[in-house]
Length: 131
Image 1 (cartoon, one colour):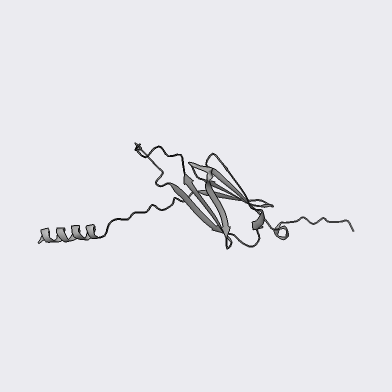
Image 2 (image 1 turned 180 degrees about the horizontal axis):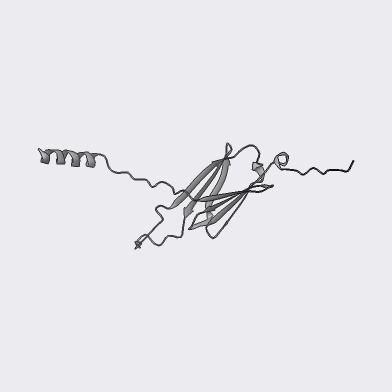
């Protein structure tokens, strides 16, 4: 009976071919707030300026990067910590940021995004006068 179960299991595996799609890696992101806005710093090793995409759709900031510094396909790593060839991360952006003035830069695998605050959201110091 065990032989019959093994055959059925093998048949089921053959009938449904394994389609394995790698999910994107989630880059670690540091977020800093200043009086002028937010600074997001994302580590994306292996990603270049040409292979990164930053976009905002419906108040969601999306960053996507493809690793391009991989060796040839015929080379197998002895040890690898990166499991994939793409990064993806998304954040919801509130109304206090001016989405038309967002800036992004990429250097040495580090993506830096600046989200400026809307003028009315910036703190302002009120001068105190002598009466």
